[in-house]
Amino acid sequence: MLCLSITYKMTPVEIRQKFAFSKEEILDYISEINMPTVIVSTCNRVEIYVSGDMANLNKVQDLWCKHKNIDKDVLLKHVNVFVGNGAIKHLYNVACGMESMILGEDEILGQVKDGYYLSHNNFELDYELNHIFLGAITCAKKIKTDTLISKTAVSVGTLVANMVFDFKAENVLIMGATGVIGNIVLKNISANENINIYGTRRVHNALTNSNNDRVKWVDFNNRYDYIDMADVVISATASPHYTVTKGQLKNLSNKERLFIDLAVPFDIDKGIGEIENTKVFDIDYFEEAARENNTIKLREADRAKVIIEHMVDDTKKNLFFHSIMGKMDSLKENCEKHSFEQLFYNLRDGLNTEEFTKVVKIMENMGCN
Image 1 (cartoon, rainbow, N blue to C red):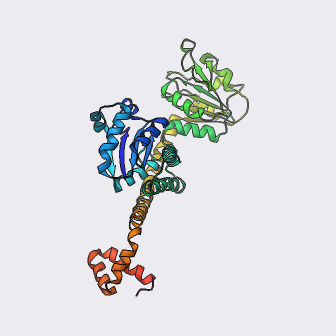
Image 2: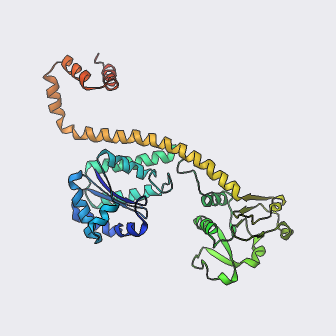
Image 3: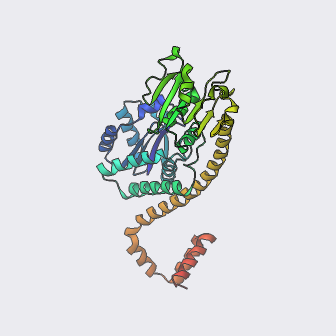
């Protein structure tokens, strides 16, 4: 198998998008190249996998440049090429999230599956591509099930959103939603369509983020009117003063409520945590959780690498076995022409100690001793 890869690691987005494929463009490309091909095209990577070796490289490159109307020198500047066992391992790493910008993320698995099934359902793929892609998909599922790598959040935005989701919040108020951190949190929480989101903004910034239809924007000066209704209050402003003080919450209804302070200096009066059924979490809490989770993720990544190594080896072994299936009769005939002792000595001379020991144990288990 041959793989041509352009990714975020070497290529800026303005170049990547020039090489990207739409679904229709993928179908057109594969129809013209007329060889078993799978294309994975995402915002972070564009990769073409073909059944073959380096002899097909120029054909794949030239057609890519032709379809995208780009000079070949531009492609050569940004493309990585993987062939044979290197291409197999690369695909496994990609499908398992080991090459992703966020280590272990599992969105890429769906994108790899989409690319594979688009080709599988519209064209004839050979044994090699079918076996390799199905193996990579199976490996990614195993890593997702057997490790914590895709379940361990390491960004503050994701950790905050997970806390909100776990709290079963129905109404969330975000102060500073138009800032960098606040906007990241807003996007993460917006993924849950069952949550009503209220965001504050100053009157003079009335147009800011008005295109986000998941948010009801309210005047910052009216924030206390919405705090009582909210299950979770998040503040991430650049204000030098508290955005919420305990003294202003004397008439707060007695329900469980979270206050999340992501600002430096602090936005939320620590005394609010003394109110019954109310908890306050600050940026230090989430940054410490992120550090701990990063340690876990790196440990789980090591476990994932071991799984990938074993499953890549199984794939290579199955591909080799499939390649000699047509030679089984001639291999058997050759063996029958020579004595067992001669075969045994040839195995001894041709294998290292570990390999030869394994062969002997297999023979013993088969009753060949």
